[in-house]
Image (tube, rainbow, N blue to C red; front, side, top):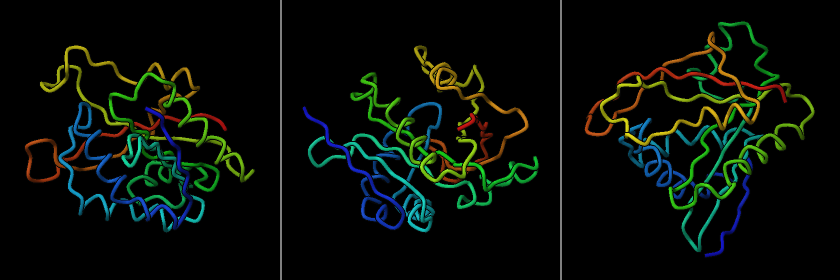
Length: 196
């Protein structure tokens, strides 16, 4: 089945909120995020993107269904929780571009789309000529977590091949309800960076 690609920037991103929200809920249900998502929460969370003039989204569709998506925006336009560890560590926030989700339904993985997601976001950040690094964060889960599948493989090797490294001094806490939970609980997020 043929795939189509759609890019949106800044305020245009709001037009695909519901598609993106449904995809995030579907993909982030799996380990390691175990996210018990809701459309209301998602719509609120996603508002950060249309408010940021330099934000970018690349979406992958199979017919009318969004099956993959990736987002990015300047770190300065991110939420307080995302910016805080960089501020505390003395980074120049104006020189960093932040990468949000990079999500694909399982049937579409292993076809090079993950690399395309990074290529497109890095190219978008480089276009401005003012950013010196790109970064993203990922959730930390213990190796013996009861919901960890036996065949689970982290993305660490993929990210390392792309030139990203975890920065031990950059961690934050984000909260969301795990599957089966009714209230949000805190999770440790580790940041990865690379020079642009």
